[in-house]
Length: 462
Image (cartoon, rainbow, N blue to C red):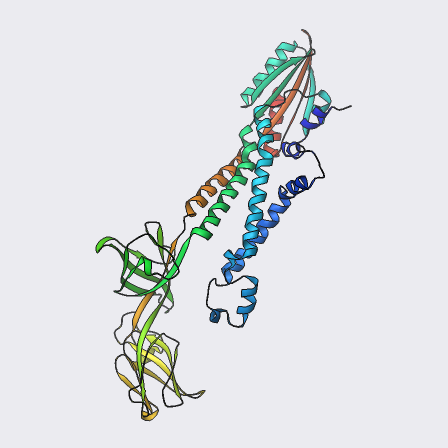
């Protein structure tokens, strides 16, 4: 009959760990078993990954107009502010529970495996291991034991010996720190999750459309909430860099940070290259322009003043006319159509479309600051100036450092798991001064090909 100890040693460390907690039917034990399930962890990671993709595709915290007819559906499902929705927070909580309980469940058993390895293994148990052999040699038991120890140590194994009942038992292992890889990876994921939750609840994010040469205070940024810092941001310049085919290559903003009127630093920022100051990151996020516009008509000569953007539609008061401010062209040339001749404002024009009701009746290219007659004088429109602004996203995330720490811990755990596999071998030697019998075997949970090569080399030397 094979003993319980024999059965334990023939199993992998993971299989041994799974048998540490006895089966019970109580509610606490069932809950513990449920939350420590690897299948649950993988399922939760998959669902969170899919939800995060959806949160990337669907704009977050937008206005109802941005979602159109889908706003009611998205709002009901919690997709307009997904990362603060109850169901996403529940997923994070369940994943945290899973990671924590898995870590607790494994820690004590791994420590026993690490600090108190079992040296003795029965001959029958060794013969059933993944790799094993036996041989008889015409040397004394003491000499064969010494030979086995020397061969183990030449290959970098740590060796333990114990003599009992006329036999010498040997145990050798290499890469024992690798058994911690899985646990450390779990801890790394848990730390990342904690950092992400801190970022969700304690992080701040706001947006500021700021015109060139304007200055705004950090506390005036909408969406940031309460801010303890006290500094100003001045927009020195903003430009759009075009490719030869006319498409946009980059947006670049030059920002200066001011503290009580004193310049602290100046930096050019672009997408994914933010300015960092006192825990805040200022990103280049979008761009646009404010276009102060005056519209008059024969019936209402005093007219109305608007501040519009490209793409806005302006009704002409007292008429059924309307003007679509289609596109601003900084260097207008009829030969280039709607493409700017250069990126410099050498001949700035506002291309507009004139409508009567729903019917398009004309197209024009108005000079900035000059009045444009509409429909033979029924109305007039003046695009007074073009004031470009840079769209900045200002963000502070206190959880970033914790997330990076978790990433480092996760990489350490993965490195231990993949590059330091735990290799274990057992041997028994019995005999007398003239001849001895050797049983030799072992296994590795990971990187079994490398272990097989190790085993063959050891076998050849023995």
